[in-house]
Image (spheres, each protein chain N blue to C red):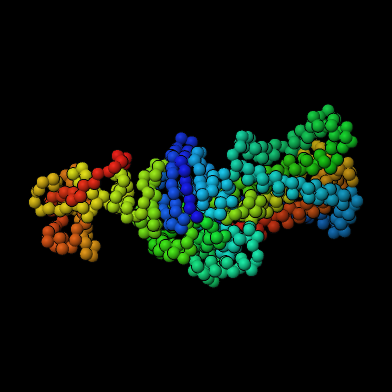
Length: 321
Length: 268
């Protein structure tokens, strides 16, 4: 099922959470709503779910206007950052909830819950209460619960935000695999650009309530539309007034045309690459990544003064930041 | 460490001593006095038709007031925590009013409302409904004085639980009614039960407001607490003590129920 957001705006008092946002999510895709905190991404997700109402604009689900529909009627699955587990129910009853309120036959509910417990790898834990599950297990239960009524859209609000780094990495990988199995249109909110790059096939980048750029992860990295996108997605340093990626910083031992002076403060070997951190004459940090061959050839040391210049200059179409 | 535990012991001693003087002492004397003349005398005092009627009346009033205040308390708490509406702070303050107001004043206010010259009194009079000096005014008085307890217990629990579970239920296809019965109510159930127990205790013990509006007609509008006063005034101390004992036992029963429920709440 496709999602279309058309000219949606939302204010909370004086704060503009969303400012004329339009967006299309293709059926079956795995889309990330990415942005810094306060960019409006969670509000947008909640408006798609019907948990929040837009001041103006429209939400279309599968081409039908859903703006006035309650969440109950939208057939979306929603996964909350803090799980929103039903604390007085077992994992099994949590997952069965959406089927029970739809008054499905008991046998069908039992089978579906078993199937989902398997899918989210919680076999044997069905009779536990949420307080007896770990954070990662609770979130997988939340996912199974959201998937149980076979929603046409799966919406996840910072689903891994409350988990520690190791579990988060595990669940990320697991979500991408799940999406390969269950081809449900999925939108997830994150402030973590790495997470968005790793999991999503489409990224919508928001800032201050506006859509800044939409595209595949690669496109956002390789062709950022604005300086903001370039800084937000991947590392970027200011070299001689130009914004460049670490790999596009050229290191020279001698002064050269267009090169400026910088001092090496730190060097890290990253397998076949080396990461060099430098300070320019104003003290601003520059990050360069060079190959090991080049690193060995240059024979650098900490505290050494070198010359840096941008190998590839980027001109932004829009002047925003 | 030794000093700390010593001061802790002192604190405990003061707290328990205070309780002993204020609470346990009088209660023990009441028990002792009741059975001074033997169990038979106490039993005789309890089984007079007037006393039995008084207990029945107290139970009837409690049986009406508690469910009414439970339903009101839950919905008032939901309104205060979840909704925004004009007059919300007024409702919030109004719920606490019975705690601040002397029950006698409440009784007097009801008297003024439902009396022959009162705002509603004339209307009820015309329709042949006896409000004052009858069950209706006593129920209203009791409902008023025991109003805050369920709402006051449920409000903080609703705050603590938050509304995310309710949102989740709605995205899963539950309508408002299903969300209330399957999610909201179960998640505050211990607070509701605790509130019901407190309300029950308050209803059983109500004296002031009911004393004003009932007219204290023996065998008709006399509740158990009023009966205690009546026996006392009639120099039937044994009778007064016996009824007090039953009321005290009911209160203790309620307290025991409360302590049994409390630990469950924490593990739930």
